[in-house]
Length: 107
Image 1 (cartoon, rainbow, N blue to C red):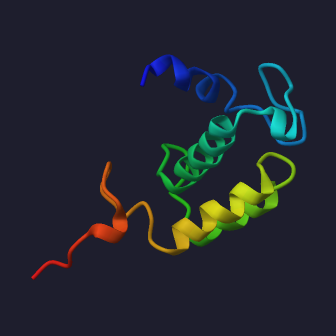
Image 2: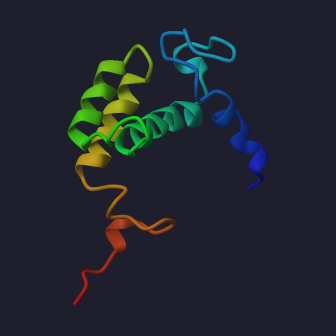
């Protein structure tokens, strides 16, 4: 697949579910699905990563923030799907490009 197909997700990941985002003020399901997913993942990564001006949030605090942003900043259904993945141990237990359910336990 071409990287061109990724461009809408990248371009629109700062749009907000309530229509107050940018660059075009898209709202709800008019925001491309990949952009809605990327927005949640980007926010979670930003919150759970240490910054020069603050410590990293624990997963529980980041999850609380995502839930507070559901229906305002983020697609509420996708927030719950993402939280389910985090609570199941993804992405820490997964390897890029590999199905986490196919991992074999270490001897």
